[in-house]
Amino acid sequence: MPTLAERDHAVLWHPYTQMQTAPLPVPIVRGEGSWLIAEDGTRYLDGISSWWVNLHGHAHPHIAERVSEQLRTLEHVLFAGFTHPAAVELAEQLLALLPQNQARVFYSDNGSTAVEVALKMVLQYFHNLGQPERRTFLCFRNSYHGDTFGAMAVSSRGAFTQPFWPLLFDVEFLDVPVPGHEQEVLSQLDILLTRPDVAGFIFEPLVLGTAGMVMYAPEVLDELVHRCHQRGVLCIADEVMTGFGRTGPLFASALLPREQPDIMCFSKGLTGGTLAMGLTTCAAPIYAAFLSDDKMKALFHGHSYTANPVACAAALASLELTSAEACTHQRQRIADAHAAFRQEIEGQAGIRQVRHQGTILAVEYDPGEGTSYFSRLRDAFYQLAIDNHVVLRPLGNVVYLLPPYCTTNEELELLYAVLRRMRALVLDFLPAPTLPEYLHD
Ligand SMILES: *Cc1c(COP(=O)(O)O)cnc(C)c1O
Image 1 (cartoon, helix red, strand yellow):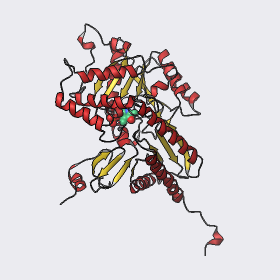
Image 2 (tube, rainbow, N blue to C red; image 1 turned 90 degrees about the horizontal axis):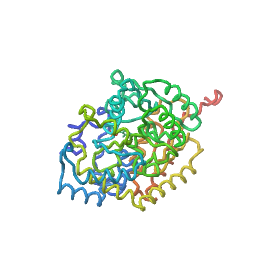
Image 3 (tube, rainbow, N blue to C red; image 1 turned 45 degrees about the vertical axis):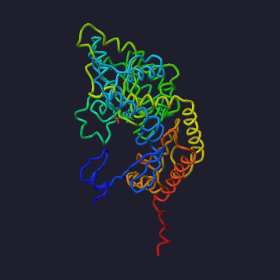
Image 4 (cartoon, rainbow, N blue to C red; image 1 turned 60 degrees about the horizontal axis):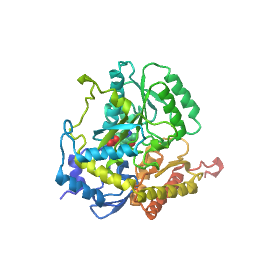
């Protein structure tokens, strides 16, 4: 009898996986709190919330209850010409929590589609206003906004998208304003803003996830957004990863001292990691530009499963948990634990930099001179974590923690122990000292 993993290998094609060389996947049959439980009973601590989606733990009973209730009431209805209670309630509740200027909610299926909708809103906004020449987007050089074509176009021109480069529309890249480089990036922006064709600026607020949890301050983002607004450039906050408490407050954009984004994108934590859903919100003036007696000014975008009631019910149940005071305390507890761990390892040999924002911690290891063994180091990190019953996905020499909020202090300690052992591994990886000639015998 073939195992589940072998049957998988015969018929499936996994994301971001070189199927020829990848080891067989780990068959997971159950989830419980921060743990994933394999077919053979082995437990794995989910240190990255299953690709940044899970908020309150796996198979959460409250979300499960609400989802099954909704399934028995109304599983789906088309969303053009029809509506349903879960979609309306979720929009009402979200708008009450989002930056105050956000006025409308547009549903889609995932983070990439939430970004596509945002880009199309910006382009058609200017089209409807009779300024179709405004169609250039600004974005950060190392950004990631998804895997569909528009989302790829506004993302880093990295190795993963190289086969598609010729088909991606042109954008203008800014460096990420990491500490010490703020003025440089503001100057880059000022030059770009002299062009008449700039339409929008899309960014991951405060933390660039896929870039390696690269972090920058709310003050400089506020200034970038401010200068865009002075030129009528629309700003899109892609909160697909940062949304729903990851960076501390419910939304990273809430940390901006003065400015508010014009458009916001959400997915991942939106349903607590239960079901696929995306949504794009916008400020009133953007919505207003689509109102007309002319049908052709409408936003012609929609997915079959737009505002799926079951996904909306999951999002409502998850939002209830996220908004509760207990969750604020959990997030604060994780942030405090991260801060203490950062203090411990910052400056140690083998550590280049430690970054921390809310419940996200990133350790950038120092692999010494040369980067030729980056991918070998990454695989060794991955294996070390798995051997210690922990799921992590290192990004090169950066290992990050992004745990579900229910992760206990004891479980966090297990994650930190793995990060400490990774430091030992890095030190082992350093080339052996070259012996002076006279010691050779
Ligand atoms: C994951 C991610 C996306 C894409 O979301 P998918 O649901 O995977 O399509 C977009 N933007 C950011 C910032 C992300 O982290």
